[in-house]
Amino acid sequence: MMVRIFLIASMISAAFGPVSGLWAIEDKSSAQVVYLEDKTDEIKDAVANPGLDQAEVHAMAQRLFEQVPEESTTRMPPIALRGWQRPDLRTEDTVDGMVHRVGNTLAGSKAPPQDALIDAYRYGEAMRKNGLVTYDDGKKLGPGQLGAYFYTEDAALGISLNEGMRQVQSWLGDEFASATTVHEIAHARDHHQGQLNPVQVRKGEKLAFQTEYWWLKVIDPAGEKIAWARAMLGKFAEGGPKIPRFAVDYLEHLAKIRFYGDKGDFEGLVRELGYQDKSSNPFHAHHDDDGHGH
Image 1 (cartoon, rainbow, N blue to C red):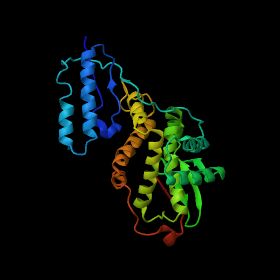
Image 2: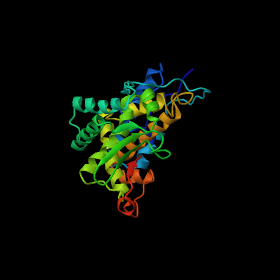
Image 3: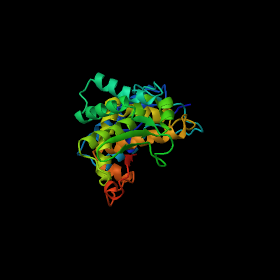
Image 4: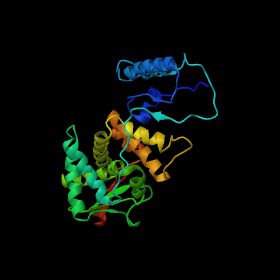
């Protein structure tokens, strides 16, 4: 029986990032494989061509299977992401482990990381050494918050990470989990540099998400690791997700950051996630501590 070949084309590039290889089912029909690989290359070139509009690229993708006979099946065969980078699923199972991963990765990066990303790590490492980066005790974070940076006008109080991050570490490794840590230590960096205040919430989040995006680009330049994890472990895994719901949602969150970050649209990302500025400064009105996170 002939099995249909599936691949990631422009219509789902928004979800998976740049198309850098064939996502295919094992098939012995070499002529059709060659045909589809040629057509895939054409689509990849079209996606990268700023002169083509979205409708033209979509039309090319829809014509992709025009020479492949239609065949129905009740079960989709196992997917193989051939040649794609896979995420590093190792973990130290600690908060320190996430900060360690950031430092070790930046030190060994082949391409020079963004200075702002390096600065964020330095603030995070200092906070870690002072015991200011911890899992949440269940009293600080609101529903759905992955983490938060707590501070006064003049000092950092600490970073709390959702207890669910332990699941993310266990199933997806410190490499992915540390993205949230990077986000929160970016807030610490911006606080110390005078770019964070409790009124301009959207501005602060845009800066932190941009730094988180730079981290994702360091560990996963083409977005292949996120795509592999979503296809093999998460939302698109055969037979349903292989990891806990919290980790599935976390992967979708990272994919969203990649999607908006690749477009340079951090304003759109912050709007999509529902962040709003505040009407008054809580430090001046009530002298309460405040925290920012996502």
